[in-house]
Length: 175
Image 1 (cartoon, rainbow, N blue to C red):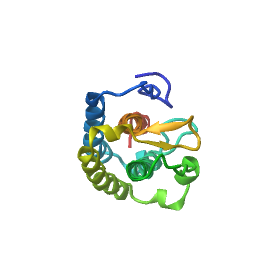
Image 2 (cartoon, rainbow, N blue to C red; image 1 turned 90 degrees about the vertical axis):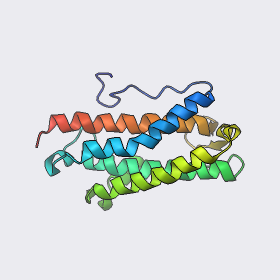
Image 3 (tube, helix red, strand yellow; image 1 turned 60 degrees about the vertical axis):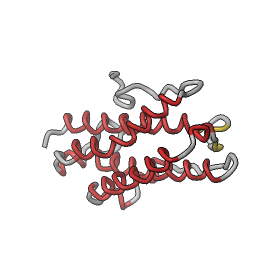
């Protein structure tokens, strides 16, 4: 844990390589994430959902919808990396996506998306050959090719990162 509200669990620190055990642990975190998120979100009031987790940050409602958007993109990137040779993936403007009108709806919609998306994503991750975790895609805003094992570790971190935003934000605005 850090005192930086932007990175309450610290910034993602990629490894130079990932062992099969590292990948298994990341997939386990991705598997467990939807339930952990639901437990935290179901206790939030509308006032808490509409409050920001930090100055200049998103509302907790926007964070929940962002997780769904981001994890859908990760799932699609996984499929691209598995079905194409080093594909160039599409980047998206997260801040602009967080401002679209659908981010004002009940976040339980995104909780359901996350729940069922993770079932598919985990089934895909658990079903691929371990050698395929080295498959890569080209991200237009990152340096060079991005291997699947690193992306899986990144999204295991991403879920915990935003879960802590929600937990911290719910304490800032009690009710």
